[in-house]
Structures are given as C-alpha cells and as structure tokens.
Length: 131
Image: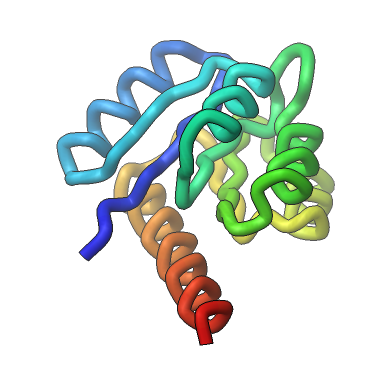
C-alpha cells in the first residue's frame, strides 16, 4: 500500500506544525508550506497526492493556488480549508476543481476522512489512465 504524500498549506505556522505532527503520527508523509508560493515550489520539486489548502492567505490566496495546481499538477487532489464560513469560497473552490472543503477548527477525524477520500479518487484515476 502506498503512503499518502500530503502537502499542508496554511499561513498559520502553528496550524501547519500541529496538523503535520498529528498526520505524520498516523503514517502520512507530510510537508508543510506557509503560503502559496512555497506550496507551488514544493509541488514543482516533488510529487504529492493530496493538498490540504487554506483558502484565505495573504499574497496569493488559496483559490489562486488551486488554479495553478489544477493547471500544473492536474493529478493532485485538493481539499480546501477555511476559518471563514464562506459558502461562496466553497462553491468557487469546487468549481475550480477542489474535491471538498473543511471549516476550521478542523477535527482530525474529518481531515483523515477527506484526505483518504481524495487519495482513493487519485488512485482510481491513475488506474483508469493506465488502462
């Protein structure tokens, strides 16, 4: 079984650090990025399966990062995360290709469920493409 390679993107360092530790302890291969530019650099440098992406970040916001990920790394699955309960952002994110949306504060079980769901979709798409 392949280990899920997860990129966690948020401008809150404590959130990235805490969630990274919790996910790593559960067997995920996790890297953190503290903003859009760093996330795009990491994606260009090595493969990831799933990106957990904050919507509201200074500079390049999550929806702009999502557009870049869909264009440059179409096989990567994106789950959006936001501290602001914005239905508009959720709808726009889904329209742009995110597979789901979580609201902060996130529960670890919800994160695990969304990441596993995203990873399963990625594996199915890879298998279909290989046929």
